[in-house]
Length: 167
Image (cartoon, rainbow, N blue to C red; front, top):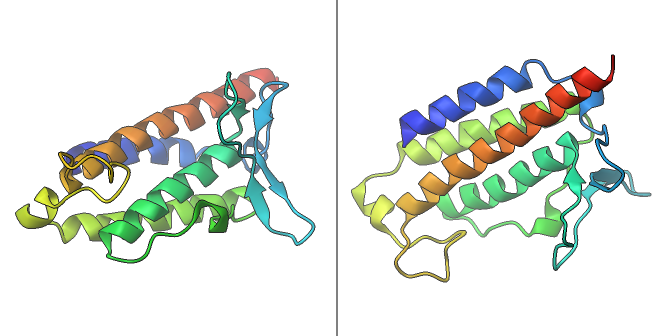
């Protein structure tokens, strides 16, 4: 699983090294989810429960916030901390800060991975499978790989689409 994570991260770095600050808030469709600066200066994501159907197309800013949210909560669980609430996770406010945030999450996740032994991997999954007693922290580790891979593909596709449409 560590090899798969490292492979996924190397694909993410390919896009992180090339993403333009203007890519983060580019809206690729008329109906988008993005991050918006509130009157207090804090950047918050668009969100709805239940999700609309179809789900709005996310911006790179929204996807980077989404990674920060789910990965931060997963790291909290992995480090034995109380998980942060979704509403408390805000976007850093610009592309370079978002990239630094994501790279910092990677560093924290690698520390979690390095501390996992057989007992920790076999422990019940606290997130996102907390309601399924058959799921273990090993399933959570595999889920991080899959979720990150999906989000990397979304960011890569949005980045390439903007590059092709900006002339």
